[in-house]
Amino acid sequence: MVQDNDTVKDFYLKLKECNKSVGYHKEQLKWLFFRGLSTENMFKVNMDGLQSLALDEILERLSLEQ
Image (cartoon, rainbow, N blue to C red):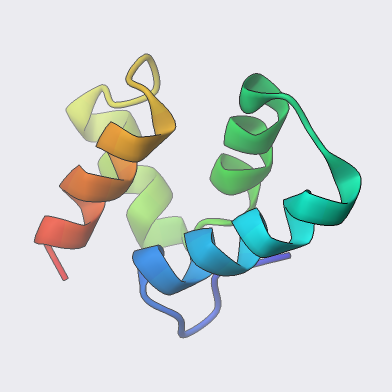
């Protein structure tokens, strides 16, 4: 799953909905979230050092910029 033209929040909600049937652990879900982010948003994650934060906090910080 990739972000494409979705907002970060919409992408996360779709990923979270898909996860209901799979049941990934938090770290696996976070890895899938990073893997599917747009190049621009992944750049922001890396530049701002957000990788170590909880997924909800990363989502909040990225959503503030959209």
